[in-house]
Length: 474
Ligand code: ADP
Image (cartoon, rainbow, N blue to C red; front, side, top):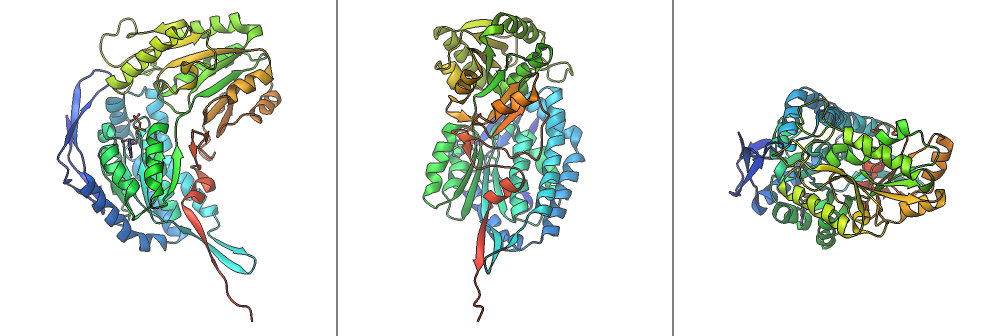
């Protein structure tokens, strides 16, 4: 049992004014593993005030100062890899392959930002004017539960890289993970007030952050529905918003694909992070000419994926985060059937042999058309839709026919052909043939997948504004 009863303001762990308590559970066992005491609007205002006080000094830090802070953060995260991994396993239920990636990635986010700062030109010249890229002010960061460490690290890295200060509101149900990460970040000894973290509810802490006049920008990762509330709220005080939202990624299997390689990639692009990923490839587009063969392979390979205890290194799909998500996935599986789709594998209920924990059966629907709700809405669980196409043009048309545009996947034996298809896709990232994660690639989406980009100079640009100084030459 772990009781999280502190928030982090001005470089100190303090008891919040808020008194509401939220229970925390292990999703694989349904057992209660802790509690978190939630901050309220007063706590949020105190955090914003601390960030505001720290901003003038932070905004004037040199490149070397920021790089040193980022390297300290990366080292502090690496120093507690085991604790971070354990917290992510217990509280979130992520399989071992995913916790391993996530914890390493969290540290590397700070290193990549240090590189970005090193190479970024803050002082520029435009005509005869001197231009300096200045931070906007206090940043508010609001993050979700499906990759708690990575999102907190990304937001903090952008704050430091740009010379901003930040108040972070993580997902309240990830409080144990947040606490361990925060202990690491605290050990990095940032100047007081540069980082502040308030656990709390979206409509309380999040709402205060998105309306407060002393907050200059909001960096949000989460659902498109919450983003719409946030963006409306932010308009009153003209905050810059950077939004990284949902997706309904297409995975295009071209007709020349080598199925031995393509099928496992297509499945894990859809089922990664137990399907709780905005970047997931949840619409698998397959050529009609190879339909039977591909469906047989999808079914047999999917049924080999091990679902269960996240501590087991062979497990590929863990539990969903909580009962609410479990119910949501059940209702989407039911919806798919009502819409006329056919269950190729999976279906409602828990997998065979599992009687507790928020595990679902990895499910693949066939006979799906792109106008069905299961093909248009983000389900956020291991539920995939297979859609057939006649030729590459039609595959591209279906892929782009979505309200979202976050991440797409192309699988082909011919990289040149895959690149030609990728070039016509409307997505923030296109992954060809299961290419590995690139920590330098810009991240974000088109259409309702978001506004703006994170990572590298693209990410830094979002939190900077140019100031030009014009001097007479006579
Ligand atoms: P989910 O429903 O899967 O938790 P959300 O998009 O609602 O996804 O949550 C992502 C983050 O946004 C969480 O930290 C959540 O508390 C926060 N949030 C939700 N609603 C609001 C809101 N109205 N204003 C600000 N933040 C919000």
